[in-house]
Image (tube, rainbow, N blue to C red; front, side):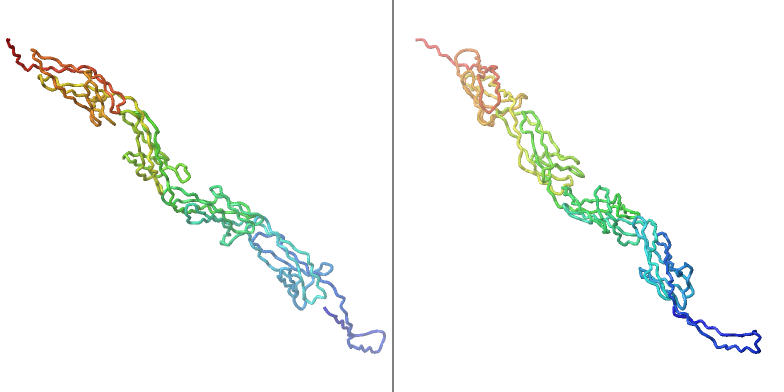
Length: 468
């Protein structure tokens, strides 16, 4: 920069046939004025590097013919658009700057662009920066992004578990999804979405409510994760667990019975477990023991929602159907939080199968004249066991018209009959038999009509013979 001065003077002069030549050695000076010449500053850069590599930026001075130009009387300072500075030292025609590039976790090469903003110094008349940008491709070095799953540690039944998937780099710093979401698929098939621009996403899952005793554990883990323009995703597959605490739910035990059977038939009692919605509940970790008011026990086996007990009913001789009533006294077990036994009685009608009650007549085998014969009518069943009259007496009518009454609650009745006394020699025989029998609420009465006999022995009576 600036005008320059050209100086010249005579050193010596000879010839011309001159006797003596005296040179005037006073210097003469010429000022050479600037005609501004442009020096171009051009920026170049390493065309491609890997992530974590170094880009070398070089600024070079050239004249209009492309020949190198050196900085004079100080350096040339080249300022880049990024604010970085390249210094071309005095006496040099170029200078360089090393810039280390970062390492991201995203897929695909990235491009770093730089250009010259300004250049000054080096005593140059005119510096023209070539501002055309230079580009460096930064190639992927695959970096792993970790996806970690967390869950609410504990909730009550019917509560909500929050599952959260979080993206982090190797230093534990958050990583955001780029150019689309990250889709995290759980082992259960549920999906958590981490939206573009976010480093985490959550999913709310409502847990059920069971009827069983003790807390349960819900376990979940990551199956896979894709998307978010990430170079490599490493899902941490360690399961996360949530404890689901009991909210006591009542299981109802209901008793049913065969509505009607015939005598000698079988009543089936069934105890059934249901929840608040009436759905079946199965016994867990052992059976449910249902005790009936009669002392009988129904067992609902582990893994079952009901159990049955067959009970054979008897056969009585009495008229009309009878009713058998049963109800639940208590129920325990099955790992159930709370059991509510429905104690409403259930009834079974036992229909008659007509059974015959036999009425047999016996009599004192022998008496003396003027003695008493005792006639006894006895009720027995098919096995010869005594049968009692119910809801009233049994009336046994004999062929002689006499009547024996078997009172309610009794299985036999008697009738004393006094015999006469005649004057004739030799024993006599008194015969009696049953004509009919009714009453006592008996289904069917079979009178044994075989006659019974009593021998009446003589008591010698004197007969007086009087002569007139």
